[in-house]
Each structure stands twice: as structure tokens, then as C-alpha cells.
Image (cartoon, rainbow, N blue to C red; front, side):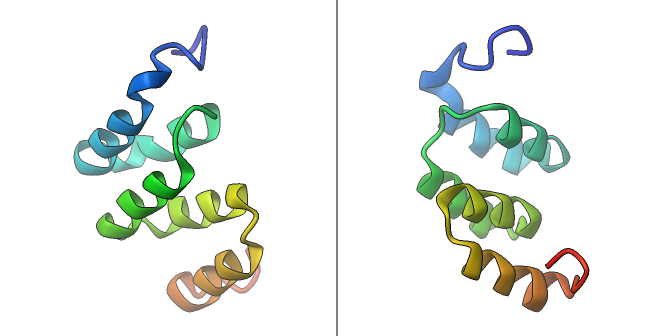
Length: 82
């Protein structure tokens, strides 16, 4: 994956599920380095696991800055990040 970020792109949605379940600390690195996953599905997976930072990142990629800012302020309480 580090050599070719799109390698195995057919399985990227499954990888997100596995990272969210078993290695959530590694998920953000995967999300930032791949463009081959369905954003809506990734958001739903992160939402179900309460992975707010990842949700903010995905919302930004979806172009939904308003909802991302809402999460930053309401869930993270991180005004400087907003």
C-alpha cells in the first residue's frame, strides 16, 4: 500500500471497517493516504464507532465544512482547530 496507494482499491471499504474495529489509531493514516474508498460509507463506519476526528476529515473531503465545524466545536470542543 505504501508503494501504490490504490493497490487493492476494491477492498478499501473493508479495510476501513477493519481499522475502525481493530486498529482505530491507524485509520486516519489510511484515510489520508487513499482516495479509493466511498466517502459516505467511510463516514457511516466512523460514526458507528464514534471516531470523530476521522468523521471531521471525511466531511472535509466531502466538501461539508459546516458539518465538520459543528463536530469540531460540539463533539471535540476544540475551538482552535475550528
